[in-house]
Amino acid sequence: MAEQQILRPAAEARYAAELATLAAGDTSPRPQGWRLSPRAVRRFLLGDPKQGISRKFYGDDPLVDRAIVSLMSQQGLMLVGEPGTAKSLLSELLAAAICGTSGLVVQGSAGTTEDHIRYGWNYALLLAEGPSERALVPSPVLNAMRSGRIVRFEEITRCPPEVQDALISILSEKALALPELGPDAVASAAPGFNVIATANLRDRGVHEMSSALKRRFNFETVHPIADPAFEQELVLRQLAERLGPAGVTVHGERDVAEILVRVFQDLRTGRTAEGASLNRPDAVMSTAEAVNVLHAAALEAAYLDDGRLSGAHVARQLQGVVLKDSPEDGKRLRAYIDHIVKERAGRSGPWKEFYQAARSLKLG
Image (cartoon, rainbow, N blue to C red; front, side, top):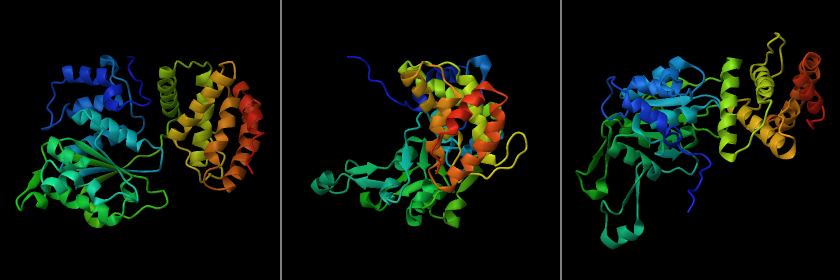
């Protein structure tokens, strides 16, 4: 029977060979409970060409160092920022490198309860034999505590405050009482346990964290990538990772990625490379959205065209990103196309293809 393919393997599976290479040559001191030393964790995220280790996180390198130091301390790590700035990816990579698994995850939402943070029960066993270790259903947090691993808490500010605060004693005491199993039953965290939480503070529907919980975390803001060359490299790498398993090939992607990144950086910052000011759209023009646009454009080129990726393919996919939040964003994009893109179209063939297709977009 053929091995089943997975759309997106976990980081520890995708980069298993690199993790093994780093572990084999890792002679640096490491904190108790860590699979790799902090230096090896840094190399895993930022790359090391001499060892054949690819760069996986693009942006603020000192942020990575601070994040690693936070996870060695008694504090949890809180990654905040706009949607699409790779907070979840960073937490996944850190967990995979430090403890060998990124799969201990609590997904925050309005429906998250304390059971998702503490523990629940197998009610059939609970009724049959009463409270017991066998009937207890541990949460990802409790599993991480017992095994000395990292637990990831995605979108923590989407949880009600009283649910968030269930973490306070866990982070402070590194222990969780299990009163149903007896007055002295306590699960104590093994060395290596810590929490990485993420929060999109720009989103609607978020809840403010209590001061007591904030004090248990070191906050790090993950900013959008400012360097166009860096962002272009990341976008092209992500495109290759998405197309490769499907056996899809396109050509011309580098020129098109340059256009895409320039458009996203212009609209994200409200200023062009030439120094012109723009009305920024309300839509999130993140690197993650740029990857989605380029991927969709490449699929159109491969399956509906001749395989040559062009600026026209990117332009046709841009509408679905910009027209998500505000009707005014269509007018802002139209003004950008009619002035900035039109001028660039006179100097470059790929920009001309982008401009000609962009003019026909239905932007309201």
